[in-house]
Amino acid sequence: MKKIFNLFDLKQKVDYKTEVLSGLTVALALVPEAIAFAMIAGFSPLIGLYAAFTMGLITSILGGRPGMISGATGAVAVIFVGLIIKLKDINPDITPEGILQFVFATVILAGVIQILAGVLRLGKFIRLVPQSVMFGFVNGLAIIIFTSQFPSFYQKGELLQGSSMLIMLGLVLLTMLIIWGLPRLTKAVPSSLVAIITVSAIVIGLNIDTTTVADTLKEGETIKGGFPPLTIPNIPFTWETFMLILPYSAIIAGVGMIESLLSLSLIDEITETRGRGNKECVAQGTANIVSGFFSGMGGCAMLGQSLINISSGARARLSGIVASVGLLCFIMFGSGLIERLPMAALVGVMFMVAIGTFEWASLKTFKKMPASDVIVMVLVTLITVVTHNLAVAVLIGVVLSALAYSWENAKRIRARKHVDENGVKHYEIFGPLFFGSVQGFAEKFDVLNDPQEIIIDFAESRVADMSAIEALNAVTHRYAKQGKKVHLRHLSKDCRRLLQNAEAIIDVNIMEDPSYKVMVNKI
Image 1 (cartoon, one colour):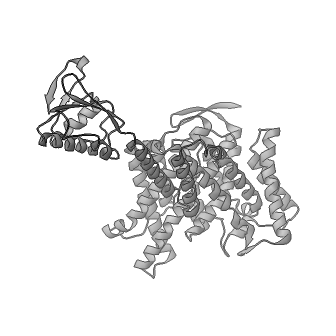
Image 2: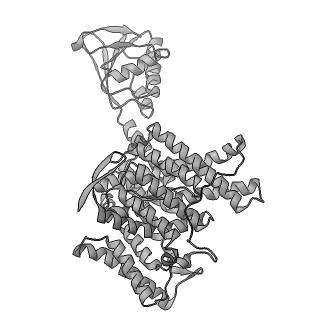
């Protein structure tokens, strides 16, 4: 049954059963991820679990993309490794608790930066990410999700052998089979949840000896805890401290926004809806601030868990809220049961997420896409897989795409030339005039042999940047030295505005289109 669910002025139809069941599935899938990411930075599992709770709850309520799941992530955890090394270099005697105080402060500052980015409406710049980069990002992330499950096939540092490996593989395949097959019979309940419950029941009921969540914890550690404790970072509030954590906060903020906005764009595409990027930036920032004050390591959107949620049919905020509250209940009351969950069930779920995440259609585009786009896509995928830094991979991909675009457009500058009945030589320019094409533009003119008056016609071109203005200035001066006059014709309004803004460095005539009254203005 569907009803109307109102939350913070959001009005949308919600299937409560689907949202609740999907949220519980995501909550189960969050547990091993949060633990693993906390361990990357050397933190207690609870630091990651608390972050998953606070990040998920706040972004589900305030975020710009209903149905998207946030939590502790590996990309953010890796950044803390550098901070910890820096802190130990400065103070070799610093305690683990002392390190955590700096971590919490860094997360809070990162949240402030993200809120500022949202208020300044910087989220719109995600539109600059080309499709080839998106393909590379998604494929790289799918490979990371897939390969990050491999440690579950090890126990105490050694690869499972014999019957242990066969049992693990069998349970993983059973999980994947249920997720694949159940939707063909019924979509009344999320197949991922049914798979986890079924495989767990088999393992616990038959007392099968296989790797569980408890086996992933270090000796003496547990996921049992209470409500996240309020923590005011106990660090020196000095300029030196601020400058110490600022670079790491800025990186966390940037990585978090890029991952979150890319995930938002992908989910928009899957659901054929549109999220709000700037609102998501503010929500991510608010969540990181709350996470820092409540003993969490911060984080950002998690595409894997988001896809589990979306594929289970969730489309509203309720699923994310249920996932976060469910995770907190597991921490506070159900830790014993969660620690008994077989890793095979969770691994199977993530394997299916990886398979569903990979853009298989991108493999068919190798002979259809331009070579530059194929190269960018492959490079972004490789950088993502090798570095596990999605933000760096995307930034490199955007830069390479921009360079490839500039190179292609630079080759398109050309000039058609003719002399009219009045002895005036016309240069009809084709292609954009910008930093990449100015050299080719300058080579088009025969200053010494041209007549006393020339017209440069921009009907099929445009002046794009400061380099273009300087190129026009250089051509004008070359003709001026020979006592010859230059007119610019058919300039668009934005091009004329650029020239007017640069009138201190350029001295040319502008000739309007003759059909709109001929006039020559000195600027």
